[in-house]
Length: 186
Image (tube, rainbow, N blue to C red; front, top):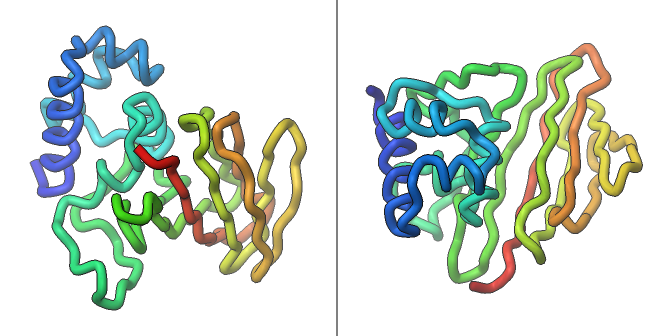
C-alpha cells in the first residue's frame, strides 16, 4: 500500500470511528457501498474522484483531508503536483490540492483536470458551502440549479455548492480549472 492509499484508509477509518459509525452507517451517509468503504479502509481499492467527493460530503469534511497526507507549511509557495502513487480507478478526472484545507480560513483550493469528453457529477455539499470555479485552460461546462453554462479560460463563477452540480469537458483537449471551496464555520 502506497503512502497516499495508506493515508486515505487511515483517514476514513479514523473519521468513521470518531463518529461511532458502522460501515453500514457510513455507507448510508455517503452513498458509497459498505463493501467499497471496507475496501478503501483496508487499502484494497483506489476510489475514483467522484467516490472521494461522496465520502468527503457524507462526512462533512473537506476533500483535501483525504488526499493531503503530509503537513504543509502554509506560508511556503505552493505548486500543483501529481499525487505520489495516486492512480485513481477513473482517470477521466484529477483533483489535486494547491492549498489543502485551512481550518483558520475554512477553505481549500484544488486544481481540477477533466479529460476530453469527461463529466463529473457532484452531490450537494453541506449547507453554506460556496465554490469559486476559474478556468485555466480549455472549455468547461458547469451545471448549477439545472442550468448549464460555458466558461472559457480566464472566466470564473461563484455558486452555492449545497445543491447538486456537475462539470463536463465538451472539448477535444483536457480542461483545467481552479476550484476554491469555502466551508461554513464549524
